[in-house]
Length: 249
Image 1 (cartoon, one colour):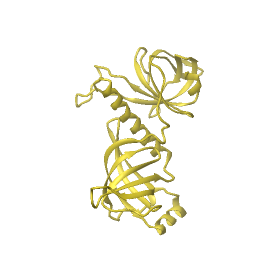
Image 2 (cartoon, one colour):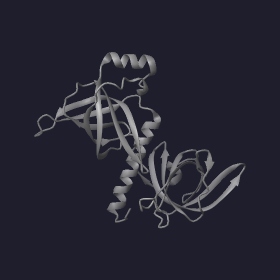
Image 3 (tube, one colour):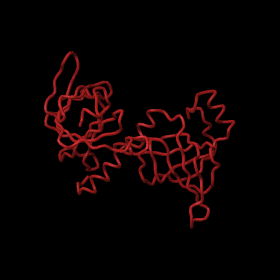
Image 4 (cartoon, helix red, strand yellow):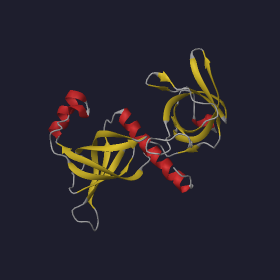
């Protein structure tokens, strides 16, 4: 039941469902995503959410439009489709009433859900001295990392909100710290991420001499970076699901 998993105050992303009259400059259907909060649970198939704001300005979403909802609840990540049935202002709060048009579906716990992928990346091992200096100056804030040192090429083959696996041509020591840099395409815009990971396992790939698979756990990753990775995973998983259902992008 909806009320068993989602409560007022939970974060929710609203992504436009396909619309034939919203076209990008490249001739592709555009789907915008808005972040908001659950305002109230009216019933098992009706909710109210705060009208989203973008750059400090309210976005007046249209009655009758359909959205793909992603709820970030304390119990995990949930998804469903919903249609806007009303919008109004109450006590200086702008509210949307939405009717659920599909059952609520649970994704695996978002921090641990792993997405198979192919993402180019660059990385380098960070010596203990540098890690210690970083912790003294700014925790694990990558703004303080020496970016003049050469980074090595690698390929991320799966990623989650908690870590990643990547292929490289060198082996790393267990528990060593690695800085790696990669970009994710979120809503048509590439965002670069620089994160630090601890090596859980680094082993040669069978039958592929000189290539190693490295299992990395993120350490002290910023909330906004983790949320960006989680959103990317959700978007890619949704594309896969839509393709499997025969729904064209």
